Image (cartoon, rainbow, N blue to C red; front, side, top):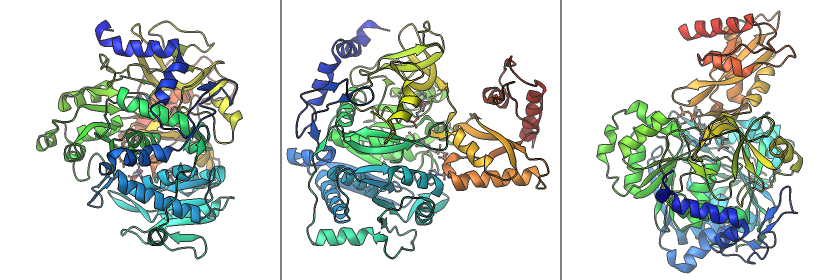
Length: 638
Ligand code: COA
Ligand code: AMP
């Protein structure tokens, strides 16, 4: 690493290492607290300690009221740009505060108070952000569920979070179809054991919804009535350690993990990243093309930019097809975004349709400074292409729903470190990243191992899983005592650059969406014709990975394999949702197993990807691997 270039990063990281308490005390001074923290970290509290245990605050106050009070009232806070509906709108900080305080009053009138959960099942419209901030305002805990999930997934989240109220809209809009949310919501509530008291439904012009007489309320009517009577809710004081939200993410089974984010640490962490990592200043425009249903949307469409007094773009569209592969360039140019954040898959999609980037010539991007990529491994090819066409630094950075913000990145705001393609660069303050072998011993530079973070995790990272400390310990803290297990594998090179190569569990990453193959296997196994199954993520040129289900039929099944495979594709779409992108089910005579009966998924993946593999020493019958190879070759040929 070049010493002069590295100095500001090194100095900052060393300062954190030398005195983390002082480092976070200083970062916390950027937040306006109701009761400022005296104690920065209590190592005895919570599962591994708690940050700012004696402080109190309100996240919405810091995101909105504070800026209006301090003179940003007329600055644009949120830009809504929706090519799928042909709509654009913008909200100043003052207007956004008005919308949020009114919706918060509506929630209060529905009986929602501090600590109550509210599920938000909404498309990418401004009201989704109003809803999140309204919950934050009154101390309610929101749980946003991505619109691409089906009724059963939503039902699981309803049963775990037990919301008092669910906020939804009549539909989401995909380029090829209208996704009606209300039937999915009704289906989920019918499946769930817990029943919410009220559902508030936002009527969109693209779809109507039938309303349950006693349970469902019309969003616009409630807001109009609160506005007419001048009802606005005040900010409620919450403990810094109180949860701001629960966001469910794929675990190794069909039961998702409820990642908890607390109020205080989250604000401190996000505020720090806006300037130091992303190099964005208050008043500048930040464009994150993700979805509010993912952690990236929580942190960098809603909370991060607003806590920082920046302007955020909420984009309801795709990188291609809405209407063309110049869509991102238009948004950057039109709204004068200085930085953009998306997943590499979006750039693969743009490159596939416009390899010469001809659409770029139509737009002025002279103000654009940096592109940030995360959510999946950024393949060096795509990264180089983006650098060449955009002529700005392209920064890969690595994080997880659990961390809530970046763990390993190139801190552009501090100093742009030399980019090594294939590496998200270096650990940020707060993250003491190590690479260990299976026995928990550090491996040498350049050797693959498990990527782990020394405890405690910093402010903003999950303190636990929703009402399940034990699952939190089991999932993350037991494999390597004293460390948080990221379940990612990779290596650290001699310059301290971290390379993330893939997951060590059965999570796969499809188009930047995190999915559980275990969850898909549960669905496949529920089909009456299926005796056994295994789902693996196989390489896909656009989406990085795509799920492939290998199935063994029960003897005596009269349906043809093709019929069963078609039903399985439909079943996964119905039970998990279109986001699972499950399109490939392959019938095989038997699955490869070890002598102790463990299915050899990793070897199947290698065969499907056309990679060389070593015959596992413990395999029961090596001939099965040839059979699988033959079936796959026949499938590719058709
Ligand atoms: N509501 C309902 N359905 C949704 C949805 C939503 N919010 N988001 C996606 N889907 C559907 C899609 O319509 C698609 O359905 P189909 O099988 O009928 O075609 C399915 O889920 C799979 O979606 P996806 O994997 O996203 O594929 P795609 O072909 O629609 O789009 C890309 C491919 C690359 C353009 C798209 O994945 C993309 O823009 N990715 C950006 C990555 C991103 O935002 N990641 C978030 C983390 S940073
Ligand atoms: P999610 O929780 O949905 O954000 O997914 C987190 C997972 O995505 C990580 O554990 C990684 O496996 C993967 N991931 C995210 N960002 C990167 C990155 N920059 N490089 C490699 N993998 C990444």
